[in-house]
Image 1 (cartoon, rainbow, N blue to C red):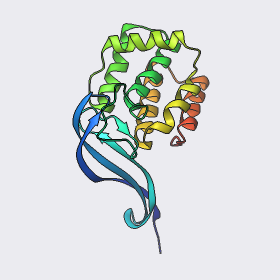
Image 2 (image 1 turned 90 degrees about the vertical axis):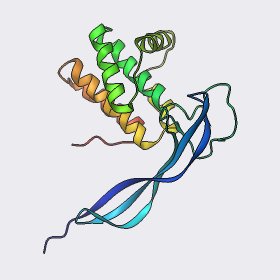
Image 3 (image 1 turned 45 degrees about the vertical axis):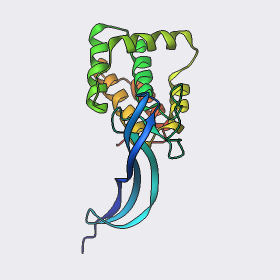
Length: 194
């Protein structure tokens, strides 16, 4: 008898409401999302195994916040939890500098960003991030380690997917490119599919 068992992650909305989004700098609707793992039998979720991650997500800009984020407080600066969008821009811009900044590659970053996050990214945003990276001594690993604890697993996976697509689109994936993507996955506590 053949028995197919496994594990599946399911994201569900736990709560909805209004909150102050530091990224949008205004009151916005939000969703409190929980990612739970389920044991599966023949690809059907049978029994819950526990909550893997939970976060608040702005329904307007899709920024993520920790569940402990004060939803009533007006923040003058974007809080550190709202880094998923900036994290993707920073990682992709870092890779852009490594491959060489061209208008074609900037357009590729914009297309990947819009596809994965559902909103446009201006060239000015990429260029200003380029300036910040050049002024700092950060490397990709340090950037990823700073971003990882403040964003959900789902958004870490989106950033990793974006980095892989961009690297693959810039040139044939070399050993160094694969190593860089694997290091990023390790910093994000994710595994790449075989």
